[in-house]
Length: 351
Ligand code: PMP
Image (cartoon, rainbow, N blue to C red):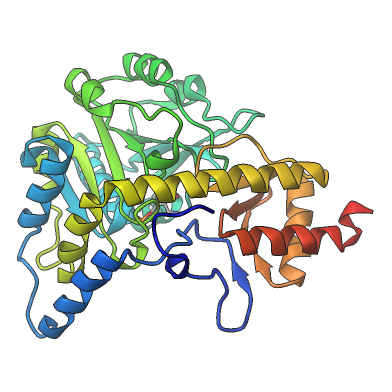
């Protein structure tokens, strides 16, 4: 990897017991020096509560996006934000008499969605992915009914990395009743070739809610910050779910510094995309091609993928087994790519 940041900024994906963890789609990069300084200067104040509500952080993120702050709601990672959106969607569905409000989603998807639906006692309307690993937007639109509280779309999709094109999202939003909230989860937005201008779409489709996170490209997963961008009326409803003192001061200190480091972010994203393409090429060479995807991970579908996962686990490389569907591998550093490819070469897999 060619990096603007010093090489020691790459935190090895190895755990203390020498296993390589490639199962959580984490960034291989540790904090930028400026972020580390901001965190260090904050540590002496841990006896103090953070802001009652994350209004300063909201202002800073909004200024970065060029949006008014009242379009935003902030939570504990994209997971926390998704929980707030689903809580509000469920509340509204119950208020109109739906006994078991449903979440419509592609399956497989980010584990957080079925988990949150279970916590909120919501039903899940599952729509299978296309054979190429894409979100079946027509199928999802058809699955929307009177009990649907919300629909979730991820782009890039977890675990396949498939993206939804601007025109596809527009058509979908035209097909879905405007009363149904559509969560557009952009956790991996920064890794996309051509991310959608969701803000332009939001002005036309008031039921669209974009979700973003600092956990992936920004590499701040432990700080737990994410946000929703939504129509001001919806954003105001979401803010009623913001937990008092819920965002740690470390997040408020680190996020503006991370946002200001645009050149370093671009450099890191470029390096991860290059490593993703190298990993995909090497896997293809040894007869295990991943699906084409645009996240910071690759997906090896079906039984072959699951078999690769078992072989890698036996040599201490931990991928994410996605039910019966296949194996997701996070793009780590050059060493983790080389280690896993060498391990597969040495096994019966390539015989
Ligand atoms: N959405 C998707 C699609 C994800 O894959 C993930 C994390 N794996 C999240 C949301 C949650 O991210 P966060 O750390 O911000 O809660």
